[in-house]
Length: 597
Image (cartoon, rainbow, N blue to C red; front, side, top):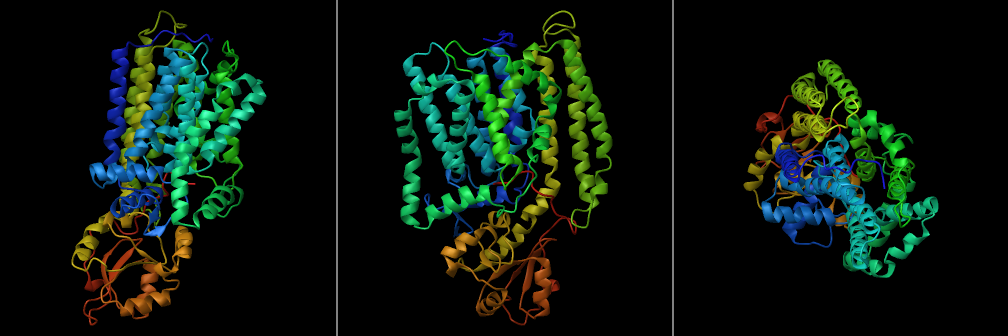
């Protein structure tokens, strides 16, 4: 049904070897970085609390009810903590598994819907695209959502292949309905609204009315509601306030109003996708043009039209939203990769040579620009940190440059045929893609020079040592700030004071669990026999001037952690307390690369 060469670029053993190499690069670095605020710390802490309390129905964050998102990823993370212990790589395992599975899934679908060459190249494109690779290594909800939505799309396309047995069509459609249900349990109604809207638009554009007869609507809806309904019923029974907050506030007001304070221009996601698919930019226009010319299947189904509708609608949907974050458009990455994968087997050696030469030059220019990274230093993020990060960036660019030269050499050898018009082979593209995969991996690992500090992890040993000396029910206050990562590293929830932040709903339904003002906290603090508190440095300085009894046990540029002096005569100043080993003064991490909606 298309003019893409169907020849398998490599034998099955070589492809299996590539998958194993990808798995090593993909999974080994999971524990090499500290958790970043806010998403990574938030979802890791929610899973830790679920695992320790044994309450698998009511999600909690910092011991407050937290109904912003459904619990599928929290369940998965809590299970990994139960099986492998509590830690950083365990917190990222579900995200990494869904990202890796997404690569295999889109490759399998490309091979079955189109041909083997398309499948292999599609998987290569997605795995080596920075957007998918980086998001697959951060503990956010969007990768899990994207996998289940991708499975919805892929199962639909697999079910609509011509000449399938009825039982095969039904099986794939049940997978489609089940994956939509799991998408809803990942992030809410968009898991069914977006695929449903795409399906309606597709049938209007393609005039493929017969498709609806093959959707197995009745049995599919039974599968969907059998998976989705139990948790919603149970959580509503235990929490009567759930439905209004989850559906009205979080699902509709979040999209329609700017209350979440995540604004962005309509073109917000354009640079996201440009950078996210940077290795393949010079081929995207040709890829879309080639895909547009693909004929329908004999049964009238048009998989390329469906993918283009999916890409355009979801992109426009989130572009129109009042709340925008980098990872929102991640579900369109797999079909974009397949459109490029359809075209890659048609690229000639001469075209690839120009493509690779351009990127080799790009890496040289990027390395020169990286030399000036320390100039970005500020009081909050000192130049010394950027200088340390520069080493990682230069190493990453060097590896990518060398592998691009290897790709040029393999291409020059005439792999895949004779003459400049011969089709490219997988080896040269795999070397080039590996360069980008390692670039993101190395530079992402180096970002921990910032992440170590923003996580608060260097303070954890001193805090945990002090907690070990105190009664288990010792209160730990968070005064005027919500720290997303420190509770996970110290293994202790905190009582919110004055500023509930995103826990506003939780404190509204359980007001007895927080203190609404700093004055109320001071009164409580003075009456406590044992207590700890996390305080921002400016607030701490103000409290010292008021004579509030405090003893510092750990601090960094963002946090001061104090305890109620066991002896009221103990001085409140820093000199009276040891500090945790910390990084250079004034250091802090830049904004996290991904966050939740």
